[in-house]
Length: 404
Ligand SMILES: Cc1cc2nc3c(=O)[nH]c(=O)nc-3n(C[C@H](O)[C@H](O)[C@H](O)COP(=O)(O)OP(=O)(O)OC[C@H]3O[C@@H](n4cnc5c(N)ncnc54)[C@H](O)[C@@H]3O)c2cc1C
Figure 1 (cartoon, rainbow, N blue to C red):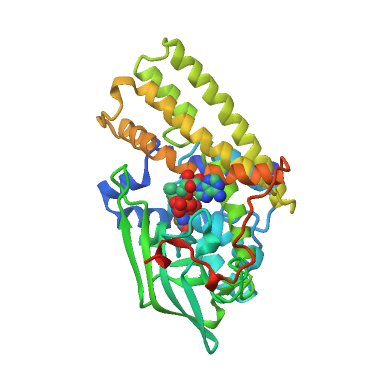
Figure 2 (figure 1 turned 180 degrees about the vertical axis):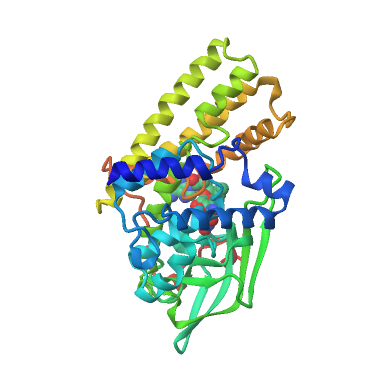
């Protein structure tokens, strides 16, 4: 069975998947236009799904393949050498998608999962706010009940891909009289609904990977709640677990512009492989990448087999983002005086990735937060005092908005 799957995956990838040079979706969107890049990625995701390689472990009744973690691992191995044009689906499938698989109602799974897998609908994750990032439980966006529905008001920030998303998984406060972790709920929000405004934010690379999103009396229908009302923190913990593993794995991606093989080839092309320092750094990059890849694979396999990674998800996330930063430094040394030359698409992709690399130590929870989790749950160190954990939210003074 697994051998058949491997042979099928290998043949399909060879016939259909582009081995394009490591690129950057954002740069591509700028040169070819975002609509063209999205259309191409939607078409590829549809093909991937039709061929039976999307949602490998998700249940068949919701559009998945109903296979096991063994096939998922085979797919990860076989597809590692390809640069699949599916970046716009990364967040939706890894985070809201996996969370819906675990916590969604049957109606939600039937409505949303098949269209995520077939590339018809793109999703984003709406957690962070101007005054609630590391301490996301301090969030101030509200969802107030109105009969069977809710009315959503507030602002999110750093929302990756909101500008082209159809739906988002959002955290909002539904009971401000409870302590901050206990009065939050998670909802599905239609990003095209009246009252949703998306404003792109420009970053150091010159691109706009994320956005500010404003909600002004946006109506959420009765079926929008993910999990239980006021138990959104539990749902957030599930999504953050998926996010840490997804980001931890991303840092070791073999198709990233900062991947070992890309930088090794680049060093050879630029005549830098005789430099002892560059050689040593490349060797270390190879060793660290392999360790991170294998650890992420182990966690993924265990999670798919029903064993939760606990604080090891934070270890994977921390190791993945540390690797990303290290790879950025190696790339800068490989490029030498070609750094920021932007002469070819490949050099431009590497230079852009160097500038973006530190972001991986912030996205999905900063490295300091991962270290806190590891310190408390793995090393048994004392917990942060958390003086605000028992006080009703509406008696706290938190965040930037409240100070206005
Ligand atoms: C590339 C990228 C993509 C992102 N995409 C999304 C997205 O799609 N959706 C979304 O909701 N968010 C997204 N984010 C936001 C991200 O989750 C937050 O930036 C992150 O959680 C940190 O929050 P903050 O920026 O408010 O920083 P803050 O929480 O204000 O932290 C500032 C500094 O203080 C440190 N710090 C804070 N608290 C502690 C503590 N208790 N102990 C020790 N140090 C502490 C932090 O480590 C950091 O160095 C993205 C961020 C990036 C960089």
